[in-house]
Structures are given as C-alpha cells and as structure tokens.
Length: 270
Image (cartoon, rainbow, N blue to C red; front, top):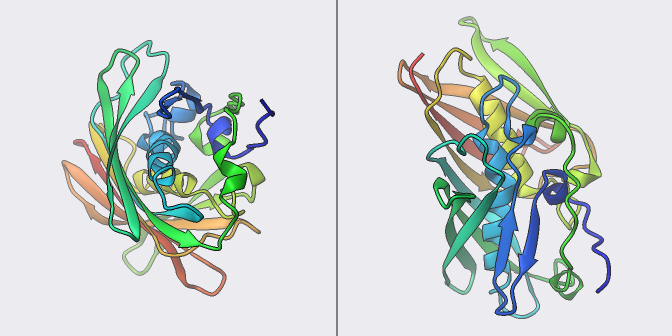
C-alpha cells in the first residue's frame, strides 16, 4: 500500500480512520489539549473536524460516479463532555439519502465506552468538474500527527476583543493563519476548521464565568474560504441572558462577500 499524502487538519487534530472489508469506515480522535479552548473549557469546536470528516465521508462515498462533494451545512450539538480518563472518541454514522443534488448524513460522537457525547449532521452538495475524485478515493489511512497545544494553537488561531458602537458591544475577531495543513484538498479553508473556529470565537463573546453545560453549533457554507492569507472570523452576541447565550459568526472574502455564517449557542448560568 502506498503511503498517505494527506497533510490536512485531520492528522493535525489526531484524527485517524480505518476501513473494514465491507467498506465501512471507523474514525478515532484522542481527547487531549486540542479539545480545550483558550478559557480552559472543553470546546465543542474540537469535535467539528471529526464530524465534518466522518459524516462528510459517508456522503462522499455514496456520491454519483465522477462527482465531488463539498459541505454546505454542518450541525453539532454537545450532549455531555467525554468522561474523565477517556482514551478517545469515535463516530457512528447514519446516511439519510441523496436527492440528486445533496447528500445528508447524521451521526453521533461516542466515547470509548459507547456513551453519546455529541450529535451531528452534515449536508454535502454534489459537484462536477471541480477535481478528479479518483485521486482521493484510494487514499490510505494516514498516521496521527497531533499538533501540541490547545485548540486555538492547533488551528493557528489568535483572538482579539473589540468594543463597537456607542454601547460598546463586545465582538471577538478570530484570525486564522494561512497554515497549509488547515486546507481542504481544493486548497481552501477546511469546512470543519471554520466550524471549530466559529465555535471558539462565538463562545469567547460570553463571559468566562458562565458555567457551560452544553453548546450547539450550526454552520452554513456559502462559498469557498480562500486560505491565501489570514482568515478573519467575527463573532457578535445576539442574546446574552442569564441561562444561555447566542452568537452569530461570519467570515468574508476580500471583496466583502459572506463565505460562511454560523450560530453558536452556549447553555449555562453565569
């Protein structure tokens, strides 16, 4: 078997996969510092690449011959943190179908004892003529190349707080460095990486004393996110109540067009 040439965000986050004789694929992600955000909490965004890659792969392998797939929607809901001492997470996929234009798979992120940690859904659009899909169908499993550090460090991410307007509304800007390992096969920012960044930035809008019990992430990808330079992701609070908060997160290209938009919901009393 040839060596894997894949150098994307999956091995950088420690994700690996194995394929059974029946064609089914098993995914594994360690529970380490890459699941921790800058405030020290467990980051739901640390699961975003696992969900995008694991569920997106189920869509991709069911696509029509000669077609490519890109993620257009991603949903991720944290149900419970991994238990103390967990050695890793897997994903259980349930492909829902193909309407001739989009494929949809839902699934569950499971702890090593079978406990459900999160629920996810990925919708993928079928495209023709984007790339030769045969070059990627036989990609062998890659070795884990888990980068050291927290989720922000692994994603080459810096956060900046800003106060806008007369009321001094808090906004958080997350800047992603143009690290090639964060790109998808087309050279743009990986959809799972944007989802992870959106969750980190959206959660950072709220006060760190909030005791987070759960969180949700809902992403729509409008167009490709170029990775030729730093990518700025901006988060603003839509609701900041006693029991939960909602943030809207957006990234734009150099022409000011929206590339992706996300909603981050954080549950937990202050």
